[in-house]
Length: 417
Ligand SMILES: Cc1cc2nc3c(=O)[nH]c(=O)nc-3n(C[C@H](O)[C@H](O)[C@H](O)COP(=O)(O)OP(=O)(O)OC[C@H]3O[C@@H](n4cnc5c(N)ncnc54)[C@H](O)[C@@H]3O)c2cc1C
Image (cartoon, rainbow, N blue to C red):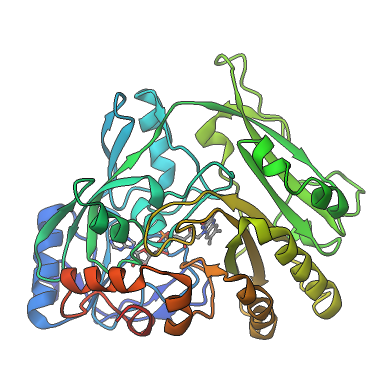
């Protein structure tokens, strides 16, 4: 009965998008406003329950799992303010990335970059360092300028640019500092993009490796090891063109167009508002591993992965995605003080892909590869100590925010405890 009075539910089974993470929290709540959220978190603290928040469940790792209270902030959603002079936008934590498009455009603003989909919540995307592609463009986390959250004492805490040390911890925190209520992002004046899709052979990509990422605002590709790969991602490829060892290559450049006459929705040549160009649709579910290697070693790393797949995993037909992301200062960011090339390995959900992924891990680890926190990885505390020079600083701040480890779970405790 008490669960019903306070809006708490029991007996919930939570599952992520990739269907490889399933668990039942002791309690589940979808607070309808900030006051309810605060009450439910304070009550969990009083009962000694651990607390985790679910975004849209697009992470493949056990980040959301908890045996305590699971929260969904789907009712704490929406852009709450824009400032065109300071190029800022504020939004509640549960706001899906897709909801920023129209709201910011009306204010003359746009997100500076976006990833392959726009379904994730802004707090979920920030927590794991979600990014798009562009050698001059950083991740969502790098754009965070303010965070308001509930800490492990049940207090509402504001983190801003007046305390860069703590802000750098909050920019990529894996949800370990507390329950994020609202964030402020640095954004861009609104802009249009023109898309160009090509299908080069991998040899062409390799010969243009150093030039292409800097020649375009966004450059990325999906290399197809076999002919069947493109179909798995439902990539629109020219009829009859074999895709083996070719790549579906995406270029987005700034476009000066007038609306509505300049808008072009022709596949492969689209020109439109930035936020309408970025997101792709992915029909079927999959799981992923994604590692970030120093940009100057990206080609060597890609060559080794291609050789591994051709030699040992010729039937792993999902395309391999390659992107570029610019350096930032967040302590647990994959781009901490370094520009990266990003290699994404996609695998079929529900299959035993661990041998393949651990071979990929063995190939990429010597490159000091950092993991995408929302995708499968083999990271240990010992590796983190090598990969993240400010790990101790981060953990110190985490302990100040959450002395009782309320926001940790079995996945995070060994890494950040
Ligand atoms: C089809 C697909 C495409 C993708 N494309 C990209 C891409 O292009 N680029 C990229 O970098 N990644 C990509 N990802 C990964 C995805 O962006 C991340 O996993 C992201 O974290 C998912 O956001 P979410 O809202 O689903 O959060 P969840 O996966 O539900 O949660 C992620 C983390 O955020 C925490 N969290 C969420 N809300 C809060 C809050 N209010 N307070 C505290 N903690 C919170 C959760 O506890 C968890 O630790 C993709 C994933 C899929 C499945």
